[in-house]
Length: 315
Image (cartoon, rainbow, N blue to C red; front, side, top):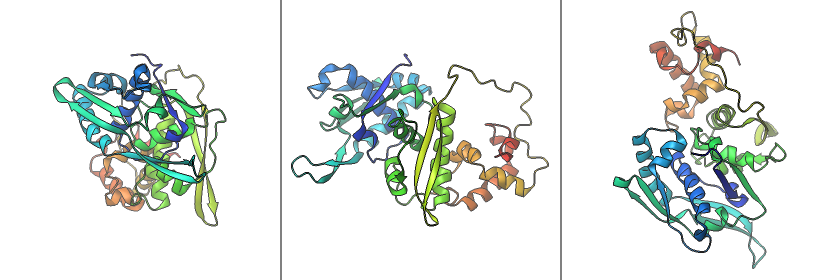
């Protein structure tokens, strides 16, 4: 499969507010590519076929995972919508548009295939692109494992020419990333579970190195600016430690204070964020997260194998 498969979206869609899981976002990626290849879709309601094999190859998952992903995405995408604002042509006033992604979607289990039709309002946003659109290679988001990291990467790509976004207010950023109102209400949780996690994934798996600045209104954080640059030596393969990894997870000699520092490390949080539900107490409160991770490390440190435990002490 070619690595040069391009995703292109009108900036209205890039800047839109929506909440979609990873399977739904990936299904849209594959459908956008299919739609642009089917020229008739520009003038008619084309039916798009996305096969589990394509999902499996592009996102490097097991066959059964690709089947399950397409099946769950079928229901999720039909119920989903997105919102964006622009100037209403007739009145000249600001209008908020609420648009469904698909008008029809079917899952054919025995064929491992999804058949879908985008709504009429979506088609121009992915095929009849205006001068203001954003384009990036599908491979850059193929390994991202968080819906927030995918959306944040897209938002930054809108500013690729300058390498820095405008200031985005906290409320606007939450909407654009699809963070639900009841999720991560405390700023330290929002930063740790959403922003830091997304930035770490983007820096590890994509072609850019990103960071953010926070802007305060008094003592409260009012917004963020994201800065990024394209990595040098994209083709360079990072060497892996081939030695004895039996001690990677050892916590011998580490006290509770050091284990707490490890649990608070943004990289540790990014690596093991999936161990708890976002709606659980540990998913909502950093102190509870820290307490739970300390206990898990003590009980069975062997489950933390993504990198040597002691590396998380340095940050």
